[in-house]
Image (cartoon, rainbow, N blue to C red):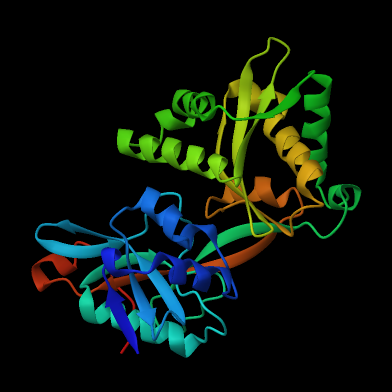
Length: 306
């Protein structure tokens, strides 16, 4: 039986045990991670925590709806041997309680219904040594790494997330507006991840001792995740981000199984990631739209499931 459980009634220990013992353990679904990015998260739980699914709700115009919280690329159903039929049961349970939802499942959640959209993720297997991994780089990636080396760039591993956030704000942050709340969540999350031993920042330093590119990297359950990054104009001119990712791969290839680029549906970004020999995987985006007739057509049509 699948039941909805409010946040305050969820047994965190049992929940996290289910996530860690599932076929696809993901840090985004751990209770402490959810407590940071979406403190009012809830869950759908099968039986005695045999299978679980985190959800995050909010209210607008008097309607409660589900959305995907920040810094959580994938959620969905977690457990062992999660079948397509079981995923469908969870979605039906959501549909019976919520009139609107826009949520992400995870890459091993199959849902064969009309209206499903598949998002792109790119990952790189780290089962080989770094020299073997580098053989799969395309020519453009190799050229940019060489350019960075000739520019005298160096990589510093440390933890000063404020520097990385400032770099992002001064560049990409100008074109994709993010709220103060979003940045506050990022800062809190970064420090908690670092405190728990799951994250570090890696920064590219130029010859003037300036940070020109940086990455916040998670390492959890043998999966390294590029959670957040920032780069300025100089980074693009010198190949700094190519150089940085290569340096990170060199350092973690013997301690992780997968490097997760966290994207991307953006074709240019996907091309950049694929330049390191990355492979495409997909994960489902689910929209449920049972809004009242007067609101329903404001949003796109949802999936068809009964």
